[in-house]
Amino acid sequence: MKKETVDLKNVKYYIRTFGCQMNENDSERIAGILASEGAKPSRSLEESDLIIINTCAVREKSEEKLYSFLGRLTSLKKRKKVTIGVVGCVAQLYDSEIFEKKPFVDFIMGPDNYGKLSEIVHSNQEEKISSTSWSQDFHDFPSEKIFRESKISAYVTIMEGCNNFCSYCIVPFTRGREKFRPLQNILQEVREVAQKGFKEVQLLGQNVNSYRDTESKKGFSFLLKEVNSIGGIEWFRFITSHPKNFTLDIAEAMSEAENVCHQLHLPIQSGSTSVLKRMNRSYTREDYLEKICMLRNLMPDINLSTDIIVGFPGETEEEFKDTLSMLEEVRFTNIFSFRYSSRPRTAASRQKNAVPFEEKKKRLIQVQALQKEIQRNFNTSLIGKTMKILCMGKSKKDTQVYSGRNEGYQVVNFKSRDNVIGRFVDVRITSCGPYSLIGEAS
Ligand code: SAH
Ligand code: SF4
Ligand code: F3S
Image 1 (cartoon, helix red, strand yellow):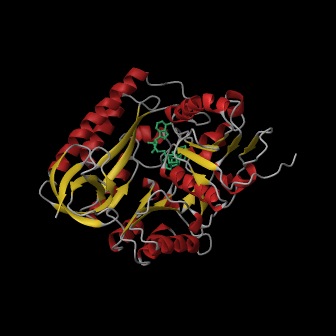
Image 2 (cartoon, helix red, strand yellow; image 1 turned 180 degrees about the horizontal axis):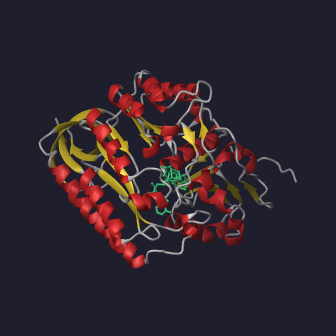
């Protein structure tokens, strides 16, 4: 049944985003579509006509966030006319099962379907709609329409999807196979944000290192050189890299391109070669260490961060210790660590040798305690140094204090006489904690 399309003019919308930077960027696109049709952002759920929840499925806990948020909307939906849409990775995965669990949800949309948003948001809400089809090509979006959250740092998506099928990971089932955005469109978007005065660009993709331009077939190192020469953007970063695709030419491009930060997030997941094999990561502990060596030879000042999973099925005490020793060996600036969470459809979810919850919890605490010490030591070594900071705003805790990041992507809170939001400023580090640096603008 064909229904009349809603007039989005004067509709107040609210978007709640869970998950990774790509979801944040997708929400900025969704907001752009709504705003271009006259809808206005609303500050509270209470005054919204349209609520969109952009979801993450990467761990069980991420998925639960959707249901606890929907729980909050139950009474609102009873009280007033409001359209509720669930989009993103949970939507793609479970499709109309979400309607069965939460009948008050009006529409469901997967990541490849955002172009159909205005068609889907209907005035007449009698029929529920789900749109979770896959697309073979990268779904481009006019970048000038993106409704960006920050006016300082811009996300630019360069590819979407993943072909790796790490045995624990749900992403290939939510984002589909790799799709690359044409290089010319990426360069166009970077030029545009540079003209608008953005200072930093973060290139996004589930596996950016495997990037290939759809026309020229040129790879990620070429892309880095091209964006670097645009001018206007002082800091480029990119996320996420995969150790197996992180090759010498990329490291060289990073070290030669003056506007590409000497900072890299390179997820290792485990320090044990046998666990890495069971995870289907396609590299060994030694391969990873070689890459780190290559990076540090080219860029001695590089800041490295990583992701760690503890308690992967069958992970022995011995194997876990290899992860601890890896942290000591590499001395990352920052890590993101997680307890293994079994995800539907993944190969690891069919394994029977689960690590007990209490053991996973214990291992996570151990990882985090060790890393805390490494970070405290590293941060202490920075006291007295002056570094360039991009100021992102005021600190959340203290409005007298500004907050920003250094080239290594560490959080720096600092005092300044002038308002320096959106600017680069030299800050002298005076003290630190394990998770942030404290300083004064010079
Ligand atoms: N390459 C991806 C990684 C996404 S998931 C991207 O950035 O798009 C981010 C991290 O979540 C992974 O690196 C991994 O450490 C963790 N993760 C993924 N699946 C997980 C699972 N089933 N249990 C616990 N952690 C998981
Ligand atoms: Fe998931 Fe592995 Fe792909 Fe990253 S590389 S999205 S962890 S399957
Ligand atoms: Fe989560 Fe989907 Fe990103 S599962 S991590 S929102 S790709």
